[in-house]
Image (cartoon, rainbow, N blue to C red; front, side, top):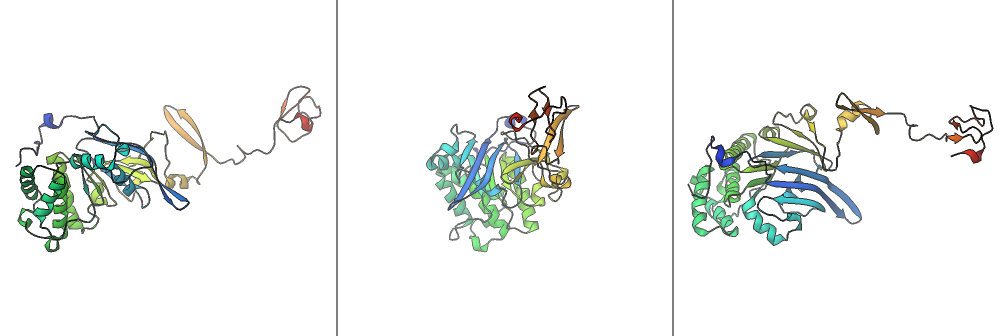
Length: 342
């Protein structure tokens, strides 16, 4: 095993610590896409953190902003506004040049795509080594790491094979090896098992668990799969470009209301899920109060509450505030003229 790849034992808490410092921090990310004169707001102020060794997964319906978000946190897409901080890089990457981002990403993040993106004319071993050379890893370390990773990922016997002779699972393992050659802090991916059958996907998920537990690498991936979601330490649910809530691994993707913990974001926004609103006839306004340390929201259905066409008028004789349509003051009987209206 290469000396520079540290694999802590399960009970070695001194090597991992109880770290509160996040390795990735996202603050108020907004992303607007423009097509001609039409603007589409894909993200509307998303904030979250990823902790060391954490498995944080992103879920949400199509169009919720998941793919855009992982592309931004991986430094591949610039947001319209907001900040993204990587551990080891003091500068916000959204203010960094492309050259600075590429250089920092070599040691910080391994990015995994749904397709393998292996070069078809190279062997598995050559693909992994080439990734190391591109990342400017020292030559003598590349050889050691490549051998270690291919053995660790269970494809050492496939090292001389090319992409077209590999199974889907073997191609995925080879692609993972190319991302791990730099010994990253975190793996970022968009549906990394989406192109695999259930059985193969399960073996790759086992592999992610092994990478997380034995190599200490955090994982942040997008998924639509119940099979994947239950492997997470924490799950963020996106909806319409904001973080709707959080879930634990005790999640059922068809019954999100059962496990959702609503989140108040950095703009003090709290989104109420649409199924909840539908059950109370989709009110547009609420009154808010505190009862026994609980926040109580009560739907307001009186449409005249803020749209009362009957103006309040002051009697110029006695000062009574007359709220009826009568032309006479209900207190003193004096005539209330148009000039008396407020």
